[in-house]
Image (tube, rainbow, N blue to C red; front, side, top):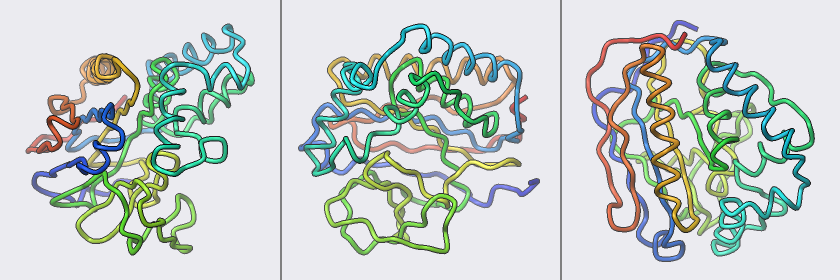
Length: 256
């Protein structure tokens, strides 16, 4: 639980030009958190997640209503564009929205995952926390070659290979850290308790999505500032700015 982040040095995140050609509206927001102590729960974050759930419960959205939300409808079309059936494999944001819309509560995982879920519910965007302590050098959002190794979340002893052409987050070691874009996160990058090197991602594909991504990034950084957590300056990647360099030196902070 008290492990020290092992990744060191900068990380270059790059969008595959082929992906941007197929989904030209794709926008990826990034925040680097070099060294943070992730704890079980933080009252401020718990309150944000509960408020987001309550707001969604009050809206009384049916499953079809969730799918018709502009940001979600755009993701469903983007999934179809890259050969994924969104009815079988909904994007990460649609999954959490559907669950809460049924009057459920999301499981409380830890302070960082809960914060991402709160922002995702309010923004209708996929928001993820990725532990990149074992990733150095490069991380690409690209079309899979088909030879990458993906370790499923919770079952890393049952490796999979993404299908050729599938959108994945992949590192320079031939490992895929997601399946079907952002449908599922991999076990290597899951956020556990303890000291972590974290990369936060916020994604959109709808018209005007960049503004929504930037608002979500600002909310995340504002929360970090309120809690005394040091994070890097947010970066936004798209087809015109496909690559960004993240991470520098920082002292450890605690999300609490």
